[in-house]
Length: 479
Image (cartoon, rainbow, N blue to C red; front, side, top):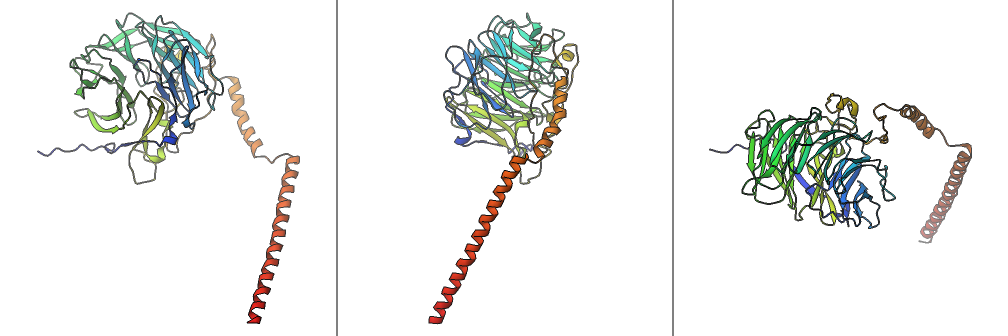
């Protein structure tokens, strides 16, 4: 019987690496053996963990600063041990968190144009782990809530605005935590651990809601992420060390909804998920390919779409949020692939003939506004992301600064903010108003001088034309 090919608008997605002049060159990417992505991007900056002597550091580059990066380019270098993980705040494009082998989490504020001097002073230092911190991830919808997990098998959830650890999940994991992921509204987290267990945890009640032993039987690291519909997607290894991917329903974890074996490579598969299109991209550490799959409600649930292949193996990978993509080019994903000495952007596009905005490719996506404050979330409130339309492209706005106090004032919009917003039209009006008198005189003088020049040039042209006419007439009369 002839096999019917499943219809999908993403079947012809194709990946394309950008040219050399659009890459970031001469970067010494970190050689730490920890399996994190080493790279984080947002619509303003790309951050890359690099090799650094005497501590840990990462580079933060404005997206447009491509080409060769000078060795003396300033870094973020406040950690005393290698940096293991970094994550941009979803509600403020200038704020980034980093976890390090020095057992601390630091939160940094990056100025708008990027760094001009090395940044050694974080906005806040979060101390609470007794071993290295390998995972940092921001809450998707509550402002200033950050999760960190360390080699001490403890998950801590912080209120960054007050610098306090408000939830401490110890005694839940008996071995190292490989990954931690929030669900869409941040009410649950799922973790994958070295004890081969997949756990779904309600952090505020401090209880395990669902647990699966030996989600993948292999001894190598697992990864787990929440999908938009509440299911959990995992990558791991079989007992025969084949790489696997699986889909789980937290309400009944006895059997996976789907389980696929892929290949026998030994690199950990890092999953990157786009909740708007339900596509998962799998980037294996040390692989030279990105595989992508569409998750649907119909069997076999995880549908293979295609593979993007390149020559060089990847050391790490950054994944751009949807609001940083170019909607005019039908770009549905952008990766920042780390080589040994450079970072190469790869764009994924859906070929379309029309120049119009493609509504089906760009449903409303999570915007940068936080729907709830940290205190509300710790008090038990949940909220879905505030969605924005990408119809006219997303323009990053100026973010308010991250202030750290013992009492969180970040939640209440400060009076200064209102004053600023009131003064904005005034500034615009000033910009539109004519320049001062002195400047005006100068400009008028310049205009007059240009007019004189034009007039004299005009006279010169007409004299030359007369001469040419006379010479022509003389030649004709001689003939």
